[in-house]
Length: 153
Ligand SMILES: [Cu+2]
Image (tube, rainbow, N blue to C red; front, side, top):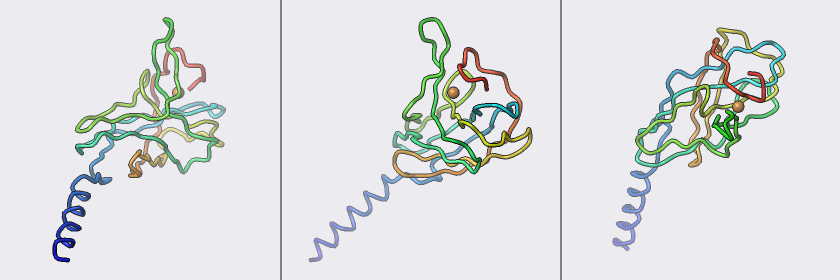
């Protein structure tokens, strides 16, 4: 019996030492690009740092904005043209960071009911593959357009 308890504690300890907490993720400079009132989509950018020893992925994003849905995108060169390609996840390697920026990884908020103005805050909750959720507030500000996008953002 004593051994069983000891083993249970060992297992618990292992589980705890390998579990990644929301505090292991930091998000730097989140922002949403300002867009005209009739914009069909908005793009969100930020730097996501993973301080844990476990590889993570952003698999979903929720927002307080009224929108149709969220998409994860990556702008990549394809046949000599820059194209936005929908992704199922945005990876953030262990002890590393992924930069979401124009022309690269980004989050798209599709069909906003009301496009937020410059200076407004948009709440975004990043959902990671291990179930961790990280809520951040992104400022709406002006930024360069992405090259070769098929939706004007
Ligand atoms: Cu996009």
